[in-house]
Image (cartoon, one colour):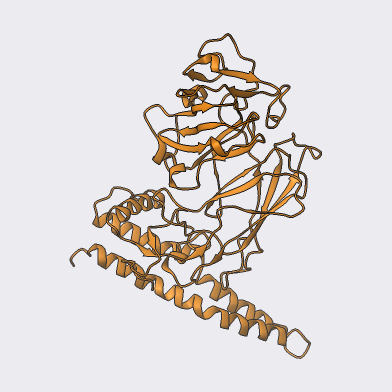
Length: 434
C-alpha cells in the first residue's frame, strides 16, 4: 500500500477524532438522563442494584473519553506525519514541535477554537495592593493558545507580610472552577495552585538579575561602578539615589534607584549580561518578562526609555511620564519567547536616549520567566503598595467551540503540548474540523 500524503494524514486525523467529538456532543443528553434516573431510584422502591447499574453505565461511558484514549489518536497522527516527512522525532513533544514548525512554514492550519482570553486579570474592588496580573495568550509563532479551560479563575492573596512572607513577596492561590467528576461533561479545571508575586529580590518570584533594584552601594566612579551592571555612555550622568525609590526589595536593608541626569542628544545605558548570573540554558519556547518602574523629577521632560531584552526593544516616550512612579513592561506577544529575542551573548539593557529638562529615576527591574498554568503564561507583579491577604483578581476565558479538533488536543482532553497547532479563525483552515 502506498504511503499516505500529508493531506491524507490530515484527513485520517479528522476521521479518527470525529467519533470522539460526536460522542462528546451526545453526552449532555445522556448525562441528564442518567442523573434523572439516579435521582428517581434514591428512595426505597427500587433495588439498590439499579443505582449501581446506572453508576456502572456512566463509568463505562466515561472510559471512552479518557485523556489516554484521545491522546493515542493524536500521537498516531504525529507519528505517521513525522514518518511521512522524514522527521526524526518520536516523542510527543518533539514531534509536536517539529510539525508545528512545518505547519507554520507551509501555511497549514486547524480551525481556531475562538476563545476570548483577556490579556490581564481584573482586580477586586477592595484590593489594597496596586499590582497587576498579565497573561500571554499566544505561542512562539503568534498563534492563539488553544489549551486553556473555559472558566473564570480566581487569584487570591493567601500569604502577606503578616502571614509568614516578606513584604512585596506575597503568595497568591489560583483556583479554577470545580472539575467534572468524569469525562462526560466540561465544567472546570479544578486547579488549585500557588502563584508568587514577582519582585526584584531573591528567592521565589524574584528577578534573576543581580542587583535588580539597585540597592547595592556604588563602587568608584567608572563604567563598572554599579554592582552587576556596566554603564555605556557617560558614567557621571548615572548616580545612585536613595530618596526616590519605588518600593523595597523583600528582605533588603536599604533601598536605591538609578538617577539618569539630563543629557540631551546623548545615550546612556546600563547593561547586564545574562552570563553574570550564569544563565546559559534557556528554553526557546519559554517566555520571559522584563519590567521596571520609572518616574521623572518635577518639570517638563523629553526623551525615550528603551528596555532591551536580547535583540528586542520596548520603547517608552518619556514626554508622557509623571513625577509618580509608573511601570513599563514588554508587550504580551510572541517576542517574549526566548527563541524570538535570543542572540549570541544575550543581555538586559536599560537605555535612556536624549533625556532633557529633568532627572529620570529607574527602580525595581524584574526579569524572570513567566509561569505556565492551564495552557496560558502568567505574570503577577506587585506595585508601589504591597498586596494584603484577600486581595483578589479574576480572569475569565469564554467561548470555545467544543467540536473543534483543537479542543480534543487541549489541556482538558489529550493534554498535548501546551502550544497546540497553528490555527486560523476566518474559515480558511486547511485541516477542517470533524
